[in-house]
Image (tube, rainbow, N blue to C red; front, side, top):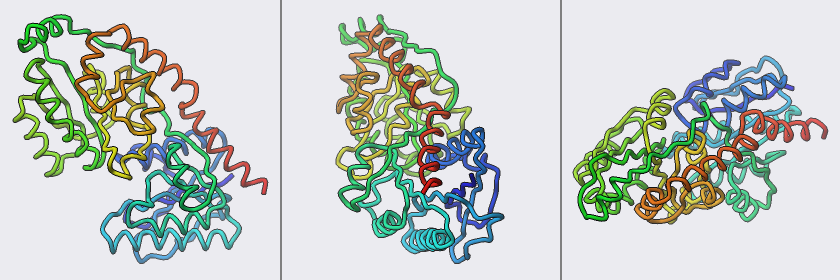
Length: 359
């Protein structure tokens, strides 16, 4: 089976080197294309990446693909975004006319931003629709009347040993209303400024906690002025905050070094509300408890994480229940190993592809 994955990298090329996506800084390219394609290749699928620059025609493919997979345009400037969306639609229409089955993988709430028209057209064209969260499947049904198949994001990296060093002296210090000696090591990571803004919504709660518990916060994200300014604000609140540029090695190091992972979410933002569980899964797989905001995809893991609006309540619960933290982590990892491995996710993709091949 030949599968062409259409990506949005601002230049035209055709490549069979899946590492372009599997090692990309953007989680959507790694988790929705690179890692599944690598696992599918082990099952005999021939994968091709296709990127079309604005204004360029669909390049001549080495062979007609059986399946063409399209996702969202990543460019957000109005003119560039519209050109990006237009060339995806043109390619999907041309391939479908030539007998290629079209799959649309919708991973964002595109109905709530200027890419709505693109999403609706792709949902109309697609022979099969895939999505990464249950709530998105509901929205796809409501907005386009299409059924979709849930295919989760796959696990990344090695399985970490569940750990949580209960800061008993820190707890005692809080009872005495005195700053704790050893800092509690927190981690936040993300790929978009919008996810960092959600962290800043927790700033006042974290600042109050820092007055009775020494905090060390690692922020892992490629530095841009908004992020650098936010890190400075957090440091100004008495939270020892360090910004690290994203890389696979940095993520592994920071996850290994932290006590807890902060995953706030803006439940008032229609795009953030429908986010996938990939960051929560990454924390669990690394053996670190996520303190996560109450969006639907995180609520599905409420038995394995701490999910709620107030991060201090979650942190206090963890400090008071160290064995409970370890129990949740072990149970969560067992579930992930069963359903979220690269092989399991590739099988889910392959089931969709095989059904289209039997049409």
